[in-house]
Amino acid sequence: MANERKIRIDRVGTVELDRIAPDHRGIALEVDEGGMEADITLEEFLEGPGNGEVGRKNLLVAVLDEITDPHNYGAILRSCDQFGVDLVITRHRRIAKHAETVAKTSAGASAWVPQAETANLPRAVKDLKEAGFWIYGADMEGEDACNRDLRGRTAIILGGEGTGVSRLLRESCDAMIAIPSFGRVNSLNVSVAAGVLFYEVTRQQRKKKTK
Image (cartoon, rainbow, N blue to C red; front, side):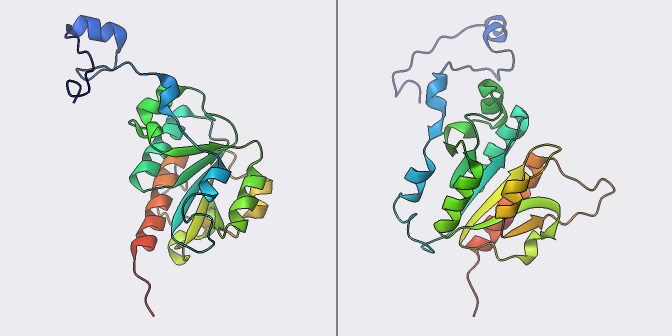
């Protein structure tokens, strides 16, 4: 693929690879970090083909409320890519500022998942509501996610590590949803919870409605 795209290949020894990329797997590629972000505004997303028409189709948006751990952020983006999340909304550019860690933990998904930045998450959630989205906050005290109809336009709010969904965003939610658990440690890492919830939304949205 590199040859087809006329990308220069330098064959070097392991020592050189270890120096420039300690976590390499036999190959390293230097890229422009600025090109690794699939940026879009919420307005552009909602004005996209079909997206602005309320009730038009299934859509899934993830709202990240102060996720500060870059490993969690990257892992969430990886799940977003796997389960077809249409947009990730954050309060600031790269909540977890460590772009290299985010890119690595996301296994490259940070280059593909559309991400929007906003200075006002409650306002963004309000805009989603006006566009026909149902808003759900992730909380272990919430209703079993499997018992909610998550088809159509769905936004999942994931709160920060240790703090959960903030008060203003919680007040904007149509419901709080939880993942049923049966272990002795009654909590999940936020990135793990994100993957489970995204899967449940995708599972429901792929099912045909029954009369």
